[in-house]
Length: 110
Image (cartoon, rainbow, N blue to C red; front, side):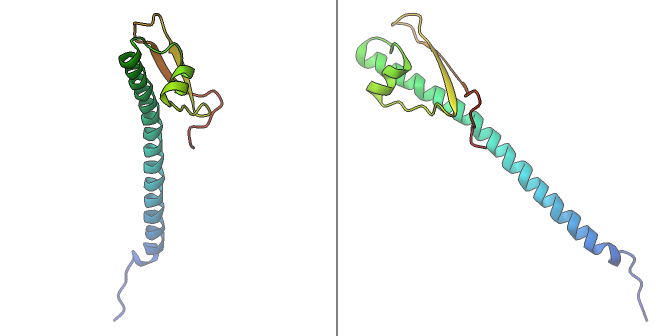
């Protein structure tokens, strides 16, 4: 006796749709992780600069006058192709305002 299976002719389409759904989920997840790592990079750099400023204050009794001072005397290394850092100091005894942004026209690793 011959059995009739109406779903048998759609089996190939079902497999293709499942594979496409898995690939889409993988790509979406990868992009989400990459976006999160970019945000984490900004936060990490800002925290590193703040810690270097506090270290300078503890050693020298004043906050550094600019970022170049931190780079020369405390080994701070900033990737200027990826990040733009705004460093504004009001006084040598007040913590400077530090803002880290994506560099204009720069690539953040994508």
